[in-house]
Length: 296
Ligand code: A2P
Image 1 (spheres, protein in one colour):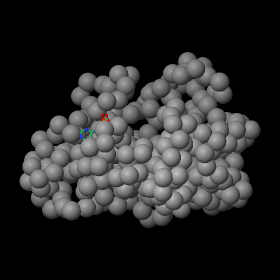
Image 2: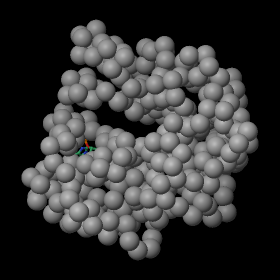
Image 3: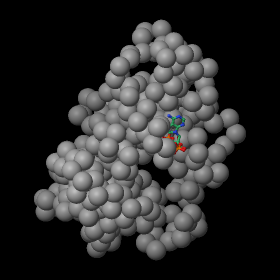
Image 4: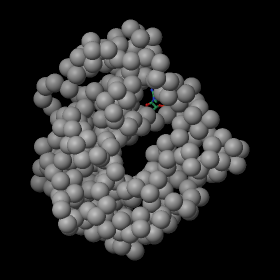
């Protein structure tokens, strides 16, 4: 974290579920004290975990805990981590009996609490994660969300460009944010399925990198920047952290973009994070989770 702030990053994407907000908070405090940046320079996001979504008191408690851990009095952005809620206190991964699933009404009730936290000055913006066009449409319908979502954070890389969702969000002023932009190569075993895409090892990505004298990761990050998607590469390696920000001295050209566009063609699921854990209660499992949007 300290290396990232020193390298020039100002947008920090946290979540209670990552289990490291106290460490991130300490790093932010250290960097502010050292004059690396000011609080006003930073854009700090966190996410409400699925076991805290279904009761107003739990939502308030979760936000207070995140603020305390991060040593902040407000967040720039707070996201509902997944639209599929899980019973409070459930173990993780949850047993099927603890999967509450998605309901537009439950999601709206959670959203009302986040709106109240905006009114109270604890949140500057609120947003969603892992939402589809259908679910966003329900949330944003007249008479429903009073404060529109600022962001929808979803998995995206050239195998999963999320083109229809990006167009929908752009038309409504919702920023799309990309998690796992490198294909999450070190993800946990439970998220690995045979045939999953591996963007960093993809020949078209490697060829574009060689052509521009950059790394495959820089190609994947630059690709999102050029499409107006907020990109969230994760690294614990200081050299990679610095390199992943150094994507503003080259541009992918039409030929590169055409080669990358081919990666999304064809059938098959291109998601590495299918959400299976959260939707064990749905008859079709993860395929029922995405309202048909699991390809691209
Ligand atoms: P590390 O933390 O060891 O640097 P994603 O953002 O898609 O979830 O991917 C994160 C993973 O990608 C981490 O395991 C991270 O490893 C690795 N990673 C981050 N930056 C690079 C890079 N520039 N080149 C190769 N791998 C990278």
